[in-house]
Picture 1: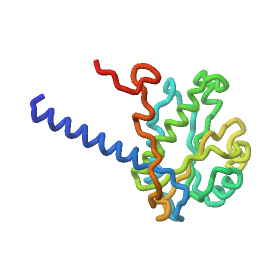
Picture 2 (picture 1 turned 30 degrees about the vertical axis):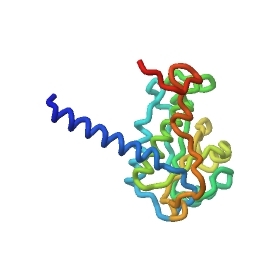
Picture 3 (picture 1 turned 135 degrees about the vertical axis):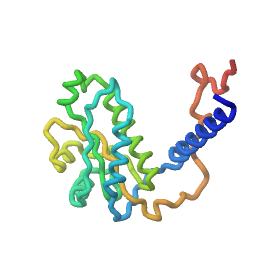
Length: 201
């Protein structure tokens, strides 16, 4: 590759990295949603992001249930202490035991199911933010009650709910007050636990 080609490739890499980090670092949890619906196209983009999330052993034991019926969303809210707003849509990540059995997974022993739920959820939240949508994770809900409300098959377990919608102007505002965010250096050790200075080889 020529010098010009290398420079162009490096510039492209830096541009793509900056765009990705911009999405990651500006994403916020949104709890106040407008009444505007989420389009089919936007929902499909968010769902596609979940489909490309990493999965342990490349298994597919989860299914995504999209809910847009306002009455159903209200009913789910009645059994969800952690649900403060009324999103235009919800995406429920469900574990299907039949699919787990086909993949020879023991759900009571294999913790990768939770990791897979998390990677799918994070992908969806980032995709939603890139589309200008707001999202909020929901884990504080009655699984048994939500299963009944959504008429899930008896063995299917609702693990996680992503609330999705258009943020209100209020939810877009920046919170006032001193910054409290941790930095990368606050979180990272190098080579051994407790070593904060990066070792140079």
